[in-house]
Length: 216
Ligand SMILES: O=P(O)(O)OC[C@H]1O[C@H](OP(=O)(O)OP(=O)(O)O)[C@H](O)[C@@H]1O
Ligand SMILES: O=c1cc[nH]c(=O)[nH]1
Ligand SMILES: [Mg+2]
Image (tube, rainbow, N blue to C red; front, side):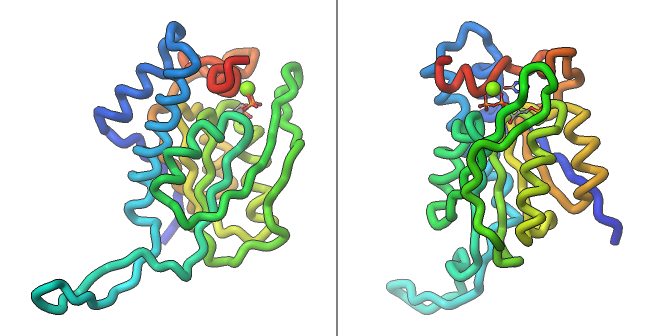
């Protein structure tokens, strides 16, 4: 089977609603943060469907024993928020993945060159190769930041096939690079927008996600 990058845009009214709130320039920071939390929650819910490891067992109900499926607590799960903006999606993701380890990765783009640089790396030296990794970053624009994050992760033993990216707005330059480098990867996004402008902003997008989350 040939692997291909897959991009899911779940057609869910709650995802559409919170995307609209996030896009609106009149939305204040406090509500923008709520929108990010809710998008993190619902997109992670969608991403978890065929990704969370389960085990088959038997439980005794008050009336009889019956077959049951549980989340496998032995399988490592990691969430990697790309700071700062990826923190906005973390709370919603974490409520659904309470056992996940959180590894922060701080990346910031140079405003002129648009090249990302890393100022915080809390990744372990090596991941267990079975680790399911969920990356949170609301914006995939030129692709520089997500490609840098994927390079750091795969270098440490992460399998792209077990990796999911939860974002809010994805743009073609980022998707093309991810597709060429990581054909087994799966992305969950609220929307795919067509354009990245000369300043590296997605249009229509939602502006600077980090600044809007933190009111800076
Ligand atoms: O695809 P790219 O062109 O690399 O752009 C996407 C990156 O830009 C934003 O981060 P930013 O550098 O603004 O940092 P911040 O989250 O701290 O605001 C965003 O959160 C992504 O990480
Ligand atoms: O539109 C964009 C592009 C990159 N980062 C953002 O926060 N917004
Ligand atoms: Mg920013």
